[in-house]
Length: 98
Image (cartoon, rainbow, N blue to C red; front, side, top):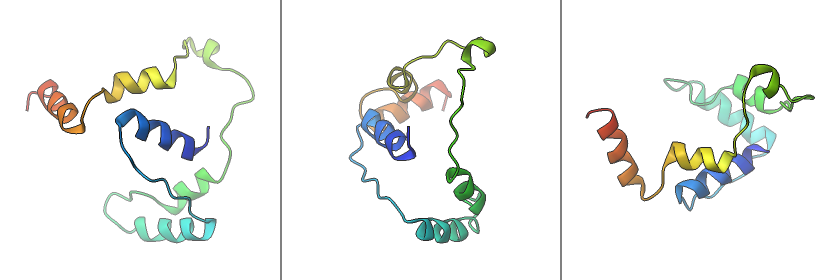
């Protein structure tokens, strides 16, 4: 899956009407140089370079690692929950005893 596809699946799972805007490599590199100067480095030149290289395995290593693959959509529903964002935040706060 591409990053765009993953972002769309996550946004759809959260019920978000987010727009996903593709950047040219030049704009993405400029974005990285700006954002890596912010506290916490939300995106860096290293991130940009990592995203520029395909990261697809040639063989299925799940069996070797003892991992049983699960559906991304099912995991997102479990991880992100369902319903309005505010309701999910309340659930997270409750679980964290806050």
